[in-house]
Image (cartoon, rainbow, N blue to C red):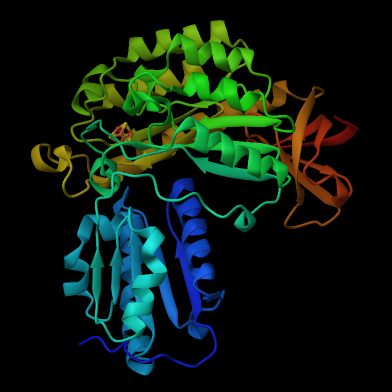
Length: 451
Ligand code: SF4
């Protein structure tokens, strides 16, 4: 039985919030934080001090869900000791598992899906007033309210969600189930938000969407990502603008031209290929072939000559043969991505792959392929970083590095990490840095001037 019925004290209740998964989840956590601060909750970094323990979860891989299940198992004893503590599971795993979570973990009080975040403070209040467990999986077709701008992790950088959900059905992907169909913010709302952020000191904005270059298709031609970029590019003070994550077949000429023409739009795009094998791409239902992807990259590099590409790769997808895997390795060597996010396939309940394709690549083979691909990508990054030695890069300064206060840390427009000696007051500025050393993951150098 759930016993989160008594208010712990008269002081504001303290919330511990742990976030798993992608950048969109971290942004959702900022929304949750904003909503709860408005309801006069306070936040703590210490789970033992908390009156409300929240996990904002990810379902993309089983590993992320298993970590949350582990946390919930640990909390059984905590709840016995402090029965008034509210335990909440939020986000994708809540949406996917729903009531099963309440059945399996009787000490959980709130299961709140991806489209109910704006009401979280009310739900927690109701539970603290003795309502018993709440399951909130509402299917609103509206974008949730914009996040509070004063809650950013970094003063000069901000993420803005312009689109959520996905109407595609890649066979491995749980997102359409956990995030629902595509919904979009209007161009006016996005522009208002970016203007507010820039007025508040932000110089670097990332537009987020599960399938961000689909933006506008729900608005019947009244909006598109290329038009949005052109509008935002006119905002004075906005120095860097990027968008993630794109879907290859939706990379239009208009969008490439906007990337080329807009001064603030960085020459960087995250364009997941997932596999370099036609047969594997077909089983994944991606809707393009390996050659079509190559042609797209060629077109993009022709239109935006200095563009850098990041990608996602899945190794060990259902039925992946040695030849299919080799085709992926070949494609990586050929395209030379600036970053590659590599995932070992794990089947996700409710996906088409889980229903009709056996997850038949042994774990040891997945692990070996993962290592091979990581090594290939490391070689590529090391070589490309060496090619940059002696060059001068524009670096947006994020602040002192975590390990050495006298060293600043920042990023190039293609998201490469750069370290260089300098003073903290440069935080938020764009510095020109001559590259003098490198590893596969980072560059280091010396300041030449501030842009
Ligand atoms: S386009 Fe992306 S989010 Fe949509 S189903 Fe495919 S992998 Fe998932």
